[in-house]
Length: 205
Image (tube, rainbow, N blue to C red; front, top):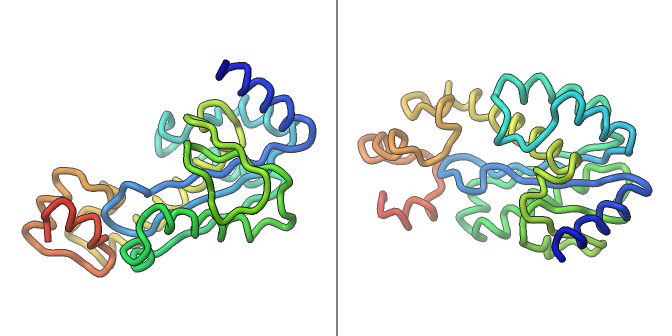
């Protein structure tokens, strides 16, 4: 039944363009959450698949960086948005993620008629038609492309922030709560870009 539903959805979306949105950094303990939206025509979906576009988690950092310019070149449109640590701590991660997605969508030249979102959660502030697809980055090229754009954009920021926040190995852990990162936090304390709301739950502050 679920497969049939996804086939029907694919047929509907293939008629014009595929608009996929995804986030990255939702589970990190440091830095903002990023979202990206990518609009693809049927022709360029096929081309990007041939280049190797798939779920960003299944690609190496090097491969993601190589694919990024190809995605940006072949996309009909794209947008990138983020939500700050302050917003995450103030509103909670779900609302902050929605803010980052809306900011990405506002950067598109035209409002999409249909939107495919990775994961089960509705984008509540979005008033247009939306479809939620669990593991959507493995099923839709536009979502996979969006996941790569968001991931590379956030990773690039983490690498730049390493200079300012040296000692926390941000270039290595990308802001996620690895055992090594959490151990450093216990020793050195938190910075203004650590998510207090996340670390309080872990009893680290």
